[in-house]
Length: 193
Length: 162
Image: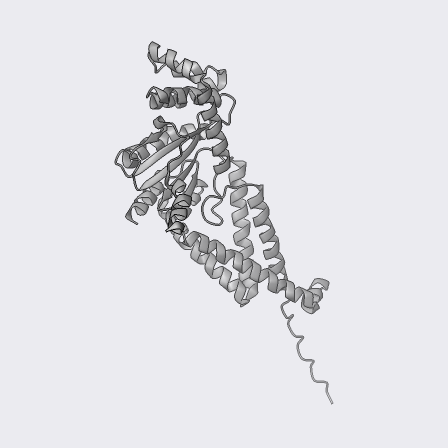
């Protein structure tokens, strides 16, 4: 019995979701058969391509249908990405993560050049929400969350975007944006197992 | 007989070196095949497609399903030592092709997986150094197997008239 309890204590953390992830960054059914951990950066051009081209298909076919639980880890590896991530995390706390994340990727070409990250964020928030997000972004807990996400990501992945697909304790890594036809076929094969 | 031929044929050390090289290359190819075959074929297919050299999905599937088996056969062929000239030459050509693809991906800054030993290994100077070392081994083996062939026997001397 003691051995069983020790084993349980050792393996339980492996089944738990990452506590550092804000609620707004997990999408879909947490008890879905497949977990995808997405490591991304708001300022990386390949991440923008992934967000614009592949993510909507993935959400439509697998996340919204309850087959996949997607956890987004936002890393800060570029000049302005820490600021962008701060606004996104702050927006997550008032339930506006998706809106702000979409706006950041949509206007990435502009703010990554001129550094006016706030303009992209403000464009999708009401005046009241702008005040809340601007204040929350300076919160030390948000800054700590950014650091934790980035440090954790640097240990786990070599570049962004990277997807780690987890099904029944097996992990598969995908760098960049894989061909969607092949990737969806792969996920469907995993679901049949 | 050239100087190189005499070295390759007579030196016992070269014979042992060739044995080590062909077993090493054979094991590497067999392991590479195993790593791919133990994963769903679509993972390797995505790695192939990411190079953007073959975009037709039927061809991508054909390569993804066929290449690991070919690598396995080549690995076993190398280990067996049967017709080493053929296996070593094919091995060298295949490695040249693989390195060429990796260099192409690096030049175009694709930032993709190499697909060498299953999923999750990004192309880097390390992957190229590894494959480059294997290519050197394959070239040495191919050269050894070609040069150590028995040179044709000289035609029998014409009988001298009594």
